[in-house]
Length: 454
Image (cartoon, rainbow, N blue to C red; front, top):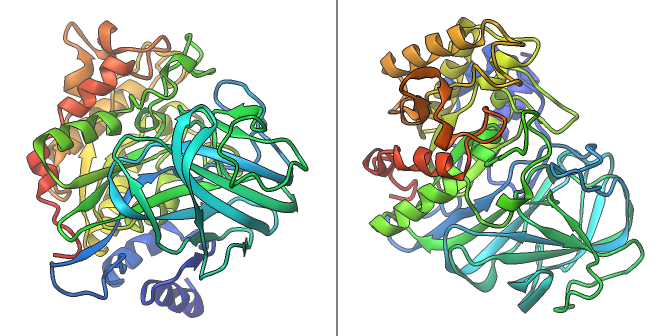
């Protein structure tokens, strides 16, 4: 790596910044070097040194995937051009509070985008909202975000309740290219037609005639929480993202699972809440994502190694990351082998520890009878999966292990999912399977990751 590039990377970790631009993709060796030489990235509230008071903690997140896929996971069209219109994105926070801030993204935009007005409100039903509250950026209502950049709003007084849907309404002024999105939201959001203008102050649903199963422009919501509260990031692929298919071919997504918040991180959040543990679980899963291989510019997104810092380690109040990813590396061409995957996991561990965060590894689920990622098209995938899982169980460099494989595999045929936990494609769990994934996670293990404020 050139000296100027390394100095730029160090500078980015040495100061807080509200407007973030796309980092250069680093070679794998440099990723390890970065992990062991760069000190922990500042988190919201890091300027306060005691454990009292409050800080901002991620309550919801969705990793940007792309801007070019023309349809969402259910096959509905997604805008590839924007013209003076308003998008009403419905998100479900995991942590409540009385103050929030919103992160908007233009990570995969082809040019600058102007967010002329933004508001938040509580979803009443569909696109109907109440308690509309304007959002500002450095004191102004409008902000222009360059291609590759993201912007964090000012703190907004607004009552957020866990699992009560929040509507983020975004008016894009003028003409813009395809919006950066999270491809498979497993949630229904809304948008108005071109040239319909600013509807961010409109509580009614009348002009929001179009629906989408993607999240456009919005990538995170933070809430102000007590100092001991922290976030844990669930990092992975479509299994973390909560995908449930409809047939042997994974797409389209089963729309029956939309808006039920049935992903394993959702079920894990409910367990933590019931136990009174002040941890917010945020989701950094991306469908078809791989640890080693990038899918940019299409919806699989940047590789896990390339996006780990931004999508996981830079979340507000993050204390640890639970990684369950790798089945696509084994099943999709060019297929990785066990040795390459283990090296990739070691790099993720080094990056997390280099930032002072805990990291836990989840074993890979069986999929030998799946059409995608199974042995019919990837003959080595099952043997490599078993080698990887053996390494995950035996290694001692991560901070813990979650054995998802044992929890969901068929005891009579450990190379496949249990029938009662499998979706139709035999690759993704069904909702019962996702609950089983959450149930096998040791809450005490997660609790060992203390707040970055304390």
